[in-house]
Every structure is written in C-alpha cells, then in structure tokens.
Length: 85
Image (cartoon, rainbow, N blue to C red; front, side, top):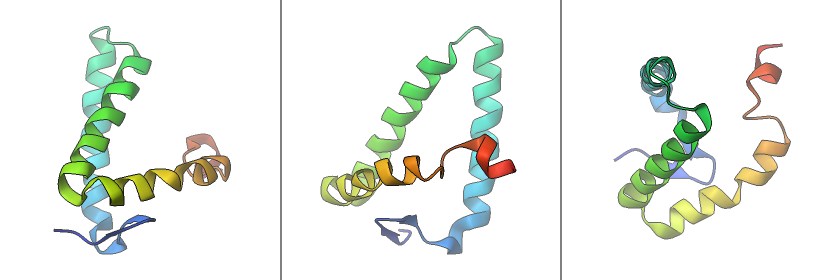
C-alpha cells in the first residue's frame, strides 16, 4: 500500500500518478465527446476518488486529507491555468 499523509501520496509514485492522470484525461475526453457533461464527470470522479481513498486508507485519513483541500484550492494548487504559467 502506498504511503499516505495529509499531503497525499508520497512522490515515490509520481510517474505512476502522472500516467494515471493521462488515462483519466483520455476517458474524460471520450465521455465528453459522447455527451456526458463535465460537471457530472467531476462529481462522479470525486465520489469514486473519495470512496477509493476511504477503502484504502480509512475514513479518518481520508477526512484529514480532505480537510486540507480548502487551503490548497485557495493557494491555486488545483488551478490548471495557474500551473501552466
């Protein structure tokens, strides 16, 4: 099982996470091409991700991770436009 803390998985799995993100982007694009709304995809993705984290790491560790998200979102960590500039 990968290491997990409030900052998420350790960087030892960075390449694997990047590959996974590429697979998800491809699936996302395919779903949009078939008419699935991006907001529906976002909600389904969040649910699937949280359910997977709870199953792998438990409710408390997942809740700790999620509690860090507001500050990380406000800091621009999830803003793709900001990350590319």
